[in-house]
Amino acid sequence: MLDDVDIHILDLLQTETRLSNLELSQRVNLSAPATHARVKRLEQEGYIDSYTAILNQEKLGYDLLCTVFMSTGIHQTQEINELERHLSAMPEVMECYCMTGSFDYMLKTIHRSRKELEAFIRELNQLGVSQLQTSIVLREVKASTVLPLRK
Amino acid sequence: MLDDVDIHILDLLQTETRLSNLELSQRVNLSAPATHARVKRLEQEGYIDSYTAILNQEKLGYDLLCTVFMSTGIHQTQEINELERHLSAMPEVMECYCMTGSFDYMLKTIHRSRKELEAFIRELNQLGVSQLQTSIVLREVKASTVLPLRK
DNA sequence: GCTGAAAACGAATATTATTCGGGAGGGGAA
DNA sequence: TTCCCCTCCCGAATAATATTCGTTTTCAGC
Image 1: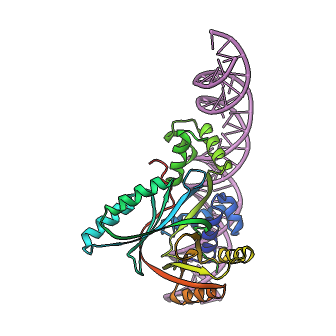
Image 2 (image 1 turned 30 degrees about the vertical axis):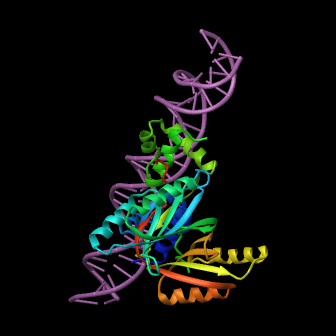
Image 3 (image 1 turned 90 degrees about the vertical axis):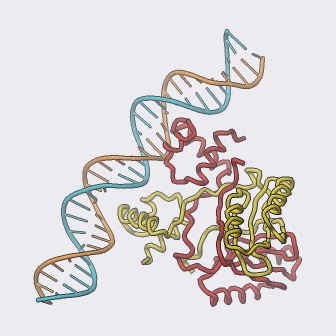
């Protein structure tokens, strides 16, 4: 289980990932080796899924963020798995959730242009989709990956 | 501007963030110092927004992921800014987008229990919201932060 | 082909992570 | 209480890695 120091470490890793182990240890009032051992434990036990670099979408030409709601006409487990594997493999699909509500899935997708978006939607339609509703993000107010550990 | 090696570096940093500079340099066929200088440049020029640790939501007790669509009754710039500042400050709000479609905003929110979700929705309602439509994520099919650089 | 700027290299150094031996603290059994 | 054992910590030593530096290469423009 996790004690307060573990939570503190996780919280710091979420927001100040580039802290050196030494700095991290000073923030949580432990020695460097003890802190290091805890981080390794948190990684191994799966509390930390991964480390990642967040790139600037705009600077890299990805200015078109969309949400796509879709329903499928299929109900067989095998076909559903197949569909989901397809969706997961599409690099434009950043997130895909199975949801409550009037649609089966919600996707968050990213594109470089309307042209690419259109091609993507066309591709989706060939995957056995019965309904599609696409909206475009006009402005990003907040985009975070931080869990609210310290509430 | 970015050359092929820069793109290669960014792509590796997205997926194998924990690579040492030496390993990274070997992957892109450059010397360690040259690679390091490029990474620093990419950071400084804003191609890399941040580094972050992705925590395991489930293991940390956050099992309730939601999308909230909302519209506001307000139209004054000042009030809108105020509202957005509020939304951004709420730790349960992981993402907030201003969107096309029948609602003004879409939120991605995270909670530990239905009880907390209810309290959150109540809080939202006190922020000058005219319409709210909340859906719950049943299953995460894909959740990525990776931009499709190599398409 | 010459020249200058930009970018690369290898070696040297500085910083940081990681290992290791030993010791403090705390719970259970006699 | 005392002893033992387990867990976790610490500081020092070592290993790995990042970073700096002086020099060399590369290449576009003349």
